[in-house]
Length: 485
Image (tube, rainbow, N blue to C red; front, side, top):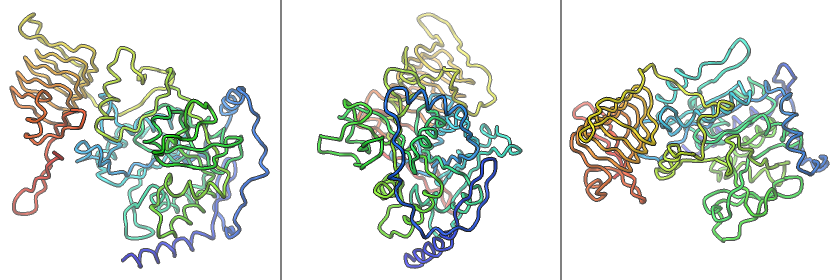
């Protein structure tokens, strides 16, 4: 099977290798071109001017930069295993966040606000809920103007496998890229939380005559052990890349020597360069077919790869970018939102975060019997359709349709869509999954040993996750897939 797959991939690479894009402003056309000649690294590219004024210059330039020849590719196919059991029934980009949002909403909102209106979303695992979310809330663009958000599952055009990695996901859709003919491709993770103007990054890419541009963020050196650190030389050209260095002396950032520059997983490619790099990667039997692990490091010695320092539109003292890849990271990012002054600003109308808005009535708080039962929420986010009926909610997030019944106490918790908490229940430091019904008089988050005995997931920091079990009918008896304990 492996031999057949390798042969199929090689045949596909040979077929594609005779083509490259010829892009015209205002229109695109694919035509036969010889790709056998390797373009040299642009050693003669002019050096960018130094000084603080360069950012202002590029911001002004980006305002007039046409974006119709930019194609955004959102990588939304990850299984999100470290977020289990939240990803037991859905893809990671579709996991709820901040009450009304899904993780993919932040990247899609960045695209729309940046003027990127040609978007491919590559899906794979458990994509039904994600597909419906995009269908119901994001079909806002005009096909008549060449704008679209297109959902593309694996189609096995190249081989019989699903997407083998981020690079393979794009490679399997290379015929789509040929048909679209973009000048640049913007590669984005669909499950990160941040605010960024991709327009400015593309302007930086063109100004520095780059083949590839990596989005980087300045982080304290002690955080380098969990990130990919970039070594940046003259004119912001990348000289090397080190994945999660453990030696305690990561290379410092050229943008700020007190920090290190870490990769954000945001890339701008010249399309021809990306196609050639993907073809080389596809023919490498030892590759894991990942952009950050394989494609970018292979391109650094041969191509002009530059770093772009993240300009945070969140407008806070500390730059905000989160990959909520674990339960603890996910919980902390949500809990930040209910702070008096949160690190991430959801309320800035200058750079709005869009989402699907279900048709629901306003939130409702009932019973005001002081000393007995009172429906109240303090320091919390309460979404539409919620009913707090004689219960007390403190520093928590309630997604649409949540019901808190009388005499309940909910503290420092996240309750997802349509969850219900029975009377006299007490919950703290917990994540309650969608559609979960908590029985009356339940106690969650107070005795972690008892929570584990109940089959709930408990993280190292003591966050309890309660999700529905999934039943699969095999024809005779239902088979239950239990969440991780």
